[in-house]
Amino acid sequence: MRIAPIFLMTTACLWAAAFGQPAASPLAQSRPESSPSESQPAAQRLWGQAKAGLQVSLQFLDAPAVGEPLRISVAIRNAGTAAIQLPDRAEVFAWLFLVQDDTDGKKAWFSEKIFPPMGDKGDWPASLEGQKELELPAADVATMKVFLYEKGLKVADGYPSAGGGGQEIKPLPGTLCEQLSVGKLQARLMLYLPRGKEGSILAASNTLDVAAGPPRLAKLSAEGRKQFMADLLKQFDRDAFGAQAAHHTAVRLGPDALADLIEAASNAKRPDYSRMWLATAIADIRDGRAAAALEKLLDSADGAVRACIAYHGPKQHSDSLDKAIVARVAKSTEGSYVSYALLGFLVFRKSVPPELLEAGLDSADPKARAAAANAMKNYASDFNVEKLRQLAKDSDPRVAQTAQRILKAMNVAE
Image 1 (spheres, helix red, strand yellow):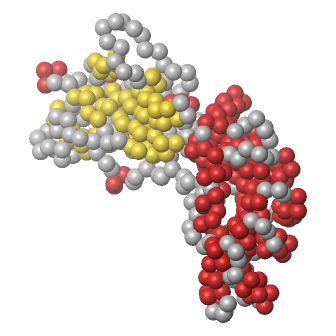
Image 2: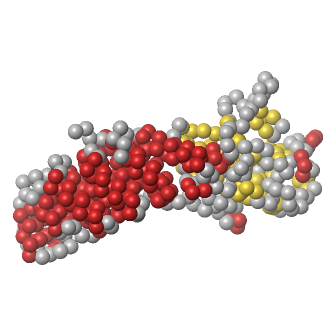
Image 3: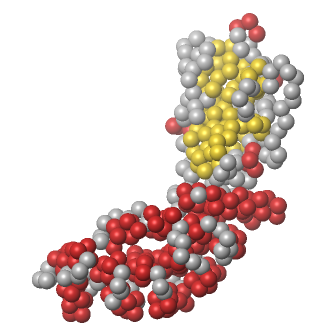
């Protein structure tokens, strides 16, 4: 049986967990990363570097997400003491510069011109007094067109240009919110103020560094949903680290993504690491369909995926899945299966089924015996103490040390 590379990486982590040390393992991954941080309140604005005495501040009023509205708030500040003359409002424009990592690598784009600046309301003064701020009306930029920013583009008259060749820069398909991928996003606003003989100003705002979240699948068009899920499954298949990031996204999508995740996890042609992270994502979405799918995968998937389900399956709190995990112990030929099942129940349910504990104690796999010892640490019954005393003399020194440590914590002599 071929074991997935990511599964081999977790062997040491399993030992760490079994012997009472912290584990940092894909099999031990229990919850997705936190949601994108909210934009800072207006009182805590960040500012770009001063250009001719002017500074620009950019904030997201909404957490960026694929396919969702994206409102921005922009303010201008005169960092000096003398008043600065401003051009006519109709001559001023801004644009966004965005950089993001996705499954195909880093990409950068710029938006169409935002003109007049940030909406149609509000007064636009002829000058801005020293140490004064001007907050512009908020605008939703989600539906704006965006263009690929490529090497060789120059900024002419305040806006990216292909140069003297006369080539037309064509917008990318879709809108800004449709071009977004889930993950790290950097954004900066460029504000252009032509001032004739006084010299034009192209002022850059502070750089926002946030995480773009997934869309609400139910709000996407049928084609948009299909494309988003296809891209997500492609990320699961890319490599083990891409699969881990895709897991976080899938869990945040929730039950709406289950059908696609279940179908993908059932495809034996997918890489082992992909199926393992798919199974983990399914286990992290509490739903009857998820529990039923994991139960089926226990019979159809390979050993690495079965071990993954044995560990994460107890999160579902499903009687049927619990019984299937325990019943699989009798059929399993994978030595680590019992170990992961024991750890899963111990970590996520704080108790272990008696049949599983017995299987661990009698296992030829030292990792399983160590996990069984850990499962008994909170119950100083006569049976447990006797079993721990036997394990304290185990032929594997790591198992023996684990049992000795637990007996000492119980204040029981070996």
